[in-house]
Image (cartoon, rainbow, N blue to C red; front, top):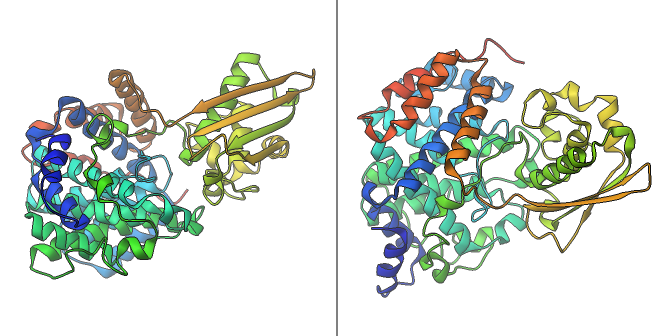
Length: 468
């Protein structure tokens, strides 16, 4: 049964209940419903997640969370990526979710204006590891959670994001609950209960962008979604209309409940077909401007001294997301249009992690170039994925370039190659080339794995020896 056919069959039912509708669709999804290109996209999401998580495992915030888990103790149920330790499933989901979002280098989908993989995969891996689920089970559950998170994003609209909620944290909690409920093979009623439990724990403030709390949002959403499904499986109770009821999820987080949006099939039938991968190590809202500036630099052989003034036109949604004017740390720089455009014009590799170190952000030549960059919020650039860069040069030229980073790749084989290159680059400090190739091969054979212990074993390797 495809997503489109689920929508058609759902439309014939006399229901106005968004929670139950989402639960029914998620519980009904089967592995055979997934087209081969969707299965490939799931494997690509997992490969990308492993790369950014192994690299993010060395971040100070992850060490803090791992130390907290060690002090608290607990049953050794699931692997903590890159730390040669096991802990409870909930703690593993929390730590791995935070690690995968720590570098802000993970995938996203604009239907939910958030990052699905960093909330879905940590919870599913922890649950699959403790329950012995197969690779096919994992893929089905991931797709169920992904589609639920995105469909709920369309149903609620963008009001909660505009009101200051981080949708990776809010919608992500419900997406993780749906994914884990599917892995536990809960029926529609129990899945609705899981969504209700998740609804009452969903939180996360955009005002925390640029701090350790933003990646913590992903970890908390993953852990809370996992717990919601586990409690529902035990018979825990919740409202079956928690998403749309009075003072429920939508009413408190902002938005207007739309059953039509829940029933509507996305373009191409699957939200997974609109997944976007990052090839710059910064907030996705900066990517269009980075690409436009990079293209102008290459096309016109620009040097920093050639640039008199730069105007970046970006959508109003950039304010409060990626428009930090004077970043002081590498983490803040990832959310600065001015700084990332200056990096692109200076020829600094925005795909690498070194350019976003605290020391690199304070480099005088980059700071000076950043001072010549002005950001204007422009109505002709809606959303976060369309930007225009205008450069005035010393010789009097005015150069313009627009870029839209919201279009998913059409060539999946080329995307696979880029993702493998990104993966190898990110895991180089943690794994040998042979080990990296082995992980790539395991992901390629994910459909045929009877359990995920081979993946967990490799992800458990010590990725770092201390803070950096």
